[in-house]
Image (cartoon, rainbow, N blue to C red; front, top):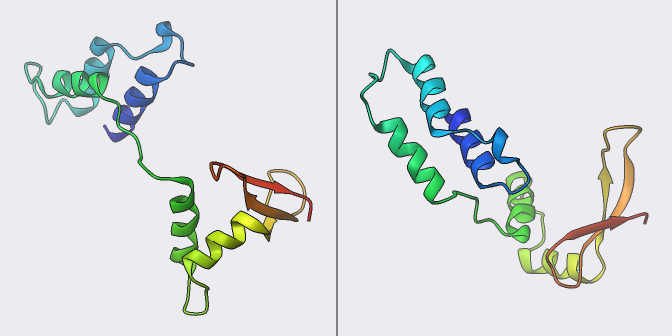
Length: 126
């Protein structure tokens, strides 16, 4: 059910997916009912209401770029890490070297820093 809700949210609100491939209300209900028929009866309006709510308002993560970066740092952090403000300033001005693991080939070093608008993380050879 969770996967079905995520697929519906993504396909319904994406402009990149052709209308013919988007999940219709009937298919959403039929697919979920076939899997969850022991829990719901055919007259239950839960799936119909769920489809309507997702179609009306897209749900999305409200996480900024820096939050994504610092959450990962904080998850792996110990007491010796510098403050968040220091790391932000470091990424904004000089950048720092990370090991990048690509899909092909061996890991390699990359200089990572925020772009001038602080909206993207950029990397290049150190």
